[in-house]
Image 1 (cartoon, rainbow, N blue to C red):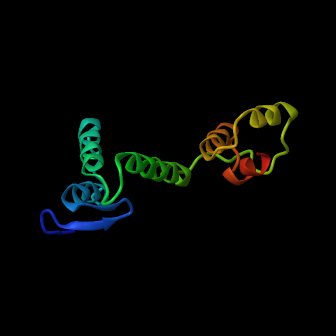
Image 2: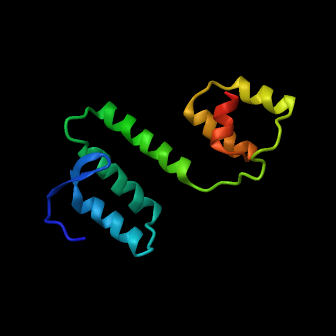
Length: 121
């Protein structure tokens, strides 16, 4: 992945400096992981560059949505998928606000699929 320095490339987040993005992508493709500090610094650098025509609040909101989508796609145990719910489990589920974040959190906690949690809410 060779891009000219400073070239603005369209990414899922909009237009960003691809030099930083490419370093992250190349490390992932090579199977190399970054140190925590390096990862944090590069992520902050990307966030500071912003997204074309979006305010800082909009960039933060978009980033949270992308992180949620990333987390949702990660594998987690669904060993209880299809099992009937107990009354106590239903009380717990129904005590939470029906947000995407809570549904994902409960699905992971009860080891069932995201869709079955969505159905309970």
